[in-house]
Image 1 (cartoon, one colour):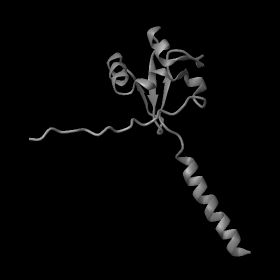
Image 2 (image 1 turned 60 degrees about the horizontal axis):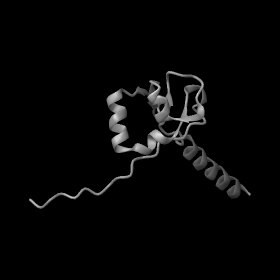
Image 3 (image 1 turned 90 degrees about the vertical axis):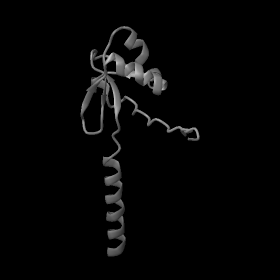
Length: 108
C-alpha cells in the first residue's frame, strides 16, 4: 500500500514539473484589446497595429517594422495565424519553433 502511494506521488510530481513548463512564446497584439482570433496577424499589421512577442518568462518584446519584415522572410506562417490581444492571451497559440534547414557549404 505504501509503495503504491509513493509511486503515485512520484508520478504526480513529474506531471506537475512537466506541466509548469508548458507556456511558450506567443505573438500578441498590444495596440488593441479586442482581438480574439477574428483576423490574421497580417491583416492587423496592414492596419498599423503593433504586435509583441511575450516569452515564457513574461518578457515583452515589441516588434519593429524591420523585425516584422525579417520575421516574414524567415517564418511567413507566423503572420497567417489568428491575432489575439493581451486580454485573450490564454487563447492565443504558441509560436511554433522554426524548423532548421540544412545549410550546404560549398567546397573550399
